[in-house]
Length: 334
Image 1 (cartoon, one colour):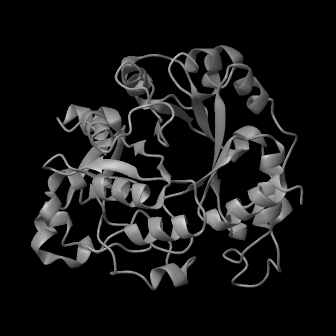
Image 2 (tube, one colour; image 1 turned 180 degrees about the vertical axis):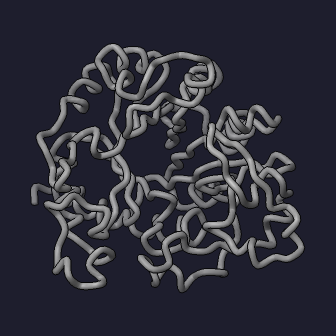
């Protein structure tokens, strides 16, 4: 049975990576909730999609932190803003979360200012209270290791403290880098997911070491065979499973799901979003001339049914309720 992962919680309805968002995801029927993990200055793991805080918090409204605005190079890209690793947890607790896409999701933006940045421990406690799993992503592993704040050790220590350390436990650990997953394989029995980008770039740790292996190489039969030596599955964009043409319409499915299954790997796809702007043209609904067309809901149920029909093993959805409803209907023969 394919799993439903609440992407950043239920980020269609509440500001992402907040306990509010995770709670709604659980209420909507998610099997797993997904925290993206970064570190504070005092090496506490917290959930943010990136370590720069401007897009998802009110940090710009805090004059006491104005002097900490800075520029950093992370994974080869230059970014200016405020970064989690420059703040203690106590300082981050003074911030409040905001919706990343307020124009697209005004109902979610209504919850701006109502939630703090959660810690990994709080998310684990919430998941165990409600009997769901977690699907954490290690963000920028090489970068955080380079500044003396590696994510992997505190992650495993927290999970072990709450009794999660086995392949049968409801945990998947994901990363776009390869080296940290290979090291984790010898440190834990928890299931690992190799994330693979949509383009033909190179995972950052391989790029840094001069290894020419690309993301396209990783999804070849040889690449999948190598991944199977350390991971339980792959996480890919939906376009890796069903390509999209220049007109936004779907092409013929690739053989990726079958190729991965032959190596014993699960295939989880991201990200399923309700809005027309994020759906293939085949599943957009309404009048494109209307101002609200791009953020209007399309036929996400049809898109989900298509993906489930291609035998994917899991979906990461901003609206896990839709993903759960379609899955359950198909399993019931509807």
